[in-house]
Image (cartoon, rainbow, N blue to C red):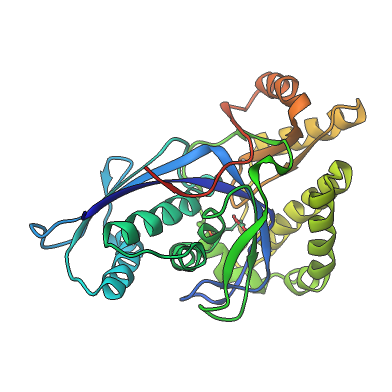
Length: 322
Ligand code: PMV
């Protein structure tokens, strides 16, 4: 068998990865935590083919070239080296959600690629090995490999930096309704953001407070303490964007739709409808609520001008083969 297809979810970070100690190996400054998104999936097929004289990468029906292609070829090269073979590959990948708009499309893409490429090459990697391989493509991809709620131990080098499961899909019926306020690709990639992260005067300050925040977030999640979890979630999201907006050069991901959704969520909480917001490196808002409120919150979001659509997610399973 020279071919394999894998499906993998995007994930939403509750504790964010922002800044790298090693940008070649994607080693983060800090640990992070996330939930996989059941409704935001990438499907990737890799076929090693003796007739090809170069790798062909097709993403959402477009042939990739330049640095986009190089990121994929790097993973293929590692897999070829491990498997002791030299065949070129055709990689075909498609998302069922908007690409590069803060819905972690690269996390879904590189976790699917790691599993599809290694399987197609005949390797049998453990989940930890897959997590490390996916991380080399995009840091946050290492978290999409595992089911449900996931922790990325930042580590200090390639061997010690990998993710593991904190709690299964069934642990907590949290929903993440993504309020899509921008479908176009964001102007600054997360790679750019990571590279200037430490230039923000708030970077060190956040690092100092993170061990406590991570401990509290983990506890709140494991005990299913929604108000505490939600407060920490929003603090962490705002910190990420404060760092981005105060780095040199500054990066502004939010738009007026982002601000409007944040305002509404705070108003709804005052009325007793409990939901919390978080954003990754993009304008779209991830609205986190409990199962009992999902339909009502989704309806309310639908009435906000500026929201183009919503994507409803439950905790999702990690990368799988089809
Ligand atoms: O994995 P990357 O390089 O796309 O970076 C992800 C950055 C954030 O989404 C903002 C945070 C995170 O931990 O996912």
